[in-house]
Amino acid sequence: MKWSDVLQFAGKGNLTPPKRVVKGDEDWKKILTPEEFHVTRKKGTEQAFSGEYCQAHEPGLYACRCCGTVLFDSRTKFESGTGWPSFTDSIEPNVIKYTKDVSFGMTRVEVECSVCDCHLGHVFPDGPKPTGLRFCINSFSIKLVGQI
Ligand code: FE
Image 1 (tube, rainbow, N blue to C red):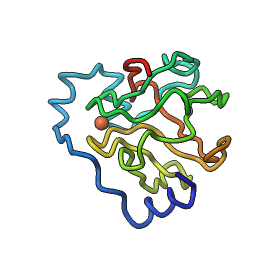
Image 2: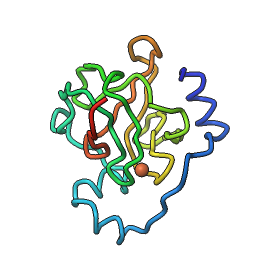
Image 3: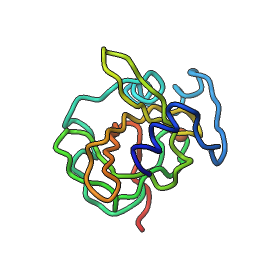
Image 4: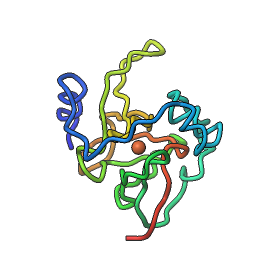
């Protein structure tokens, strides 16, 4: 994935997701804590340096907290110093949905799980090699599952 790909997806449409999981808020509330619901379904942002994966270094895969789709690999996780878990890429291009976000007076690219529309965070073009991308992700939106 490159920043030009991100802009292309955000502007002209995303790849077809591997599957779809569609539920209403009441059903999500049954399986999510109030904090998880706020971040994942209402586009909330957890406080910087508060999340459980902010400084996690365990190897493994990170799945969507809502639907369980594997989204990130710990081998692409890096210390961004921002206070949020940061990755240089997703595990597959089609598991992420990219959307232009002009809220709060900024122009950013929001990233969501393409399967269930879980709000994950944003992606920025200031990450390290090899992609130069920084996926800035809420810990509440992901779950470390299994080892590699
Ligand atoms: Fe999901």
